[in-house]
Length: 166
Image: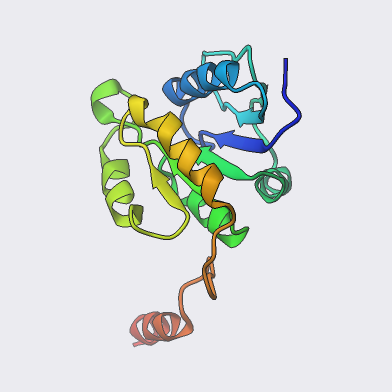
């Protein structure tokens, strides 16, 4: 059932189910059996039949899955983005839509626009764009960014401390 090729890690985050992404990736995996796909599906109803899956990974296991993969495919969540960039892994993001009852607001659309042109970020704005975004992410390899930190710059932190201590 599973290929022995490149590992792709799919995650929907820890808060809400995202069956649309999981079903898209399960269908993609059926067509691309040469790849090994592992999905963290959360509390969703859709159960994949063509890729390995788990409901939830502990934080350390999540980081290890990102470290071991070639690319991450995820919702437009900041946690997935930050871990992917920290590990220098390309990320394909598909935003959740409020109109589809996948989230309560369309904040992920704003996140996508903010992240769109960053190195290593490949946006699939619609279901039809996910396969192309995966192909591009796989072809480009590890993310080449300098000095990425998941923490705010020290100058920003100092400004916040001064403001709070006034």
